Image (cartoon, rainbow, N blue to C red; front, side, top):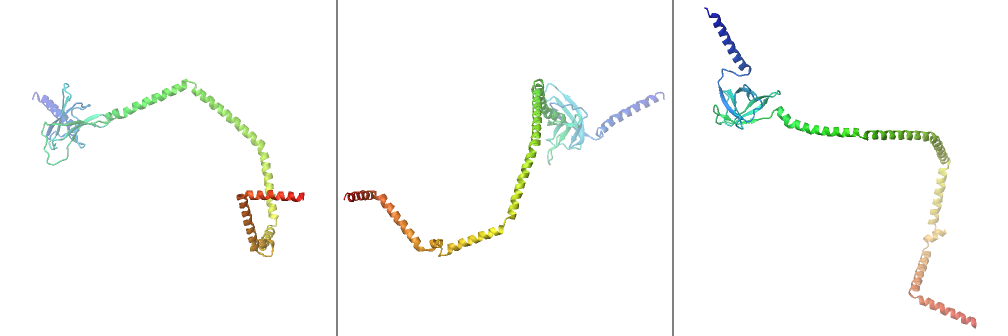
Length: 302
């Protein structure tokens, strides 16, 4: 009866420790009453993986990292032991993949189990093949940060160019040229305004005169006896057609008398023969002219 209080305190401490131990496993999603199998994976780097980290199969928690051992004298220095629920069948060829657990940079083990039938199962404490999958941070470091470096280099070159332009007289020269162009535009606008005020009234008066002349011409055209002129033209054309068709008029005789046509045709043929003979026998006509002149001289002497 003397040590009853001490015994009660000790039992309470044991119960609290037991509840704390099993409560931590419960919060991690592990059932401490279910049997487990242990498998080993060898990694070169574990990228922050810790003991008690979860083990997933297709996103479902099936175990946890039980122990991490290391030997830095080897290239693959880390031996990671995982405890997996005994009811999970792990066939040969299953792979342990080190993956990111959330966006805060935590690590976990993803167990890749091939889908096949009739495949032999891996034994407890077997060493499974491993692989490291890049997380969000590693992807940013290798991808985005590399591009960010090139972008920063370009920004530096642009800033250097701008500073060079500001240090020289390029900006001031450009502003000076813009000022001169503005002044020239102002002068040109004033000249255009002055010419408009000076020439526009005269142009308007000339246009009014032209419009008046056009109106006068249109008035004369309206007042002209267009039907009478057209009738006279029709009568003239009819008389000309009658003269052409009549055989009694001179024009009709020329057009309808075949004797006149034949006479003209024979005359043209004779002329063509004479010209042809003249070209072929020019001496004949020269001899004729010479002898003809001698006979005339003899007649004069007698």
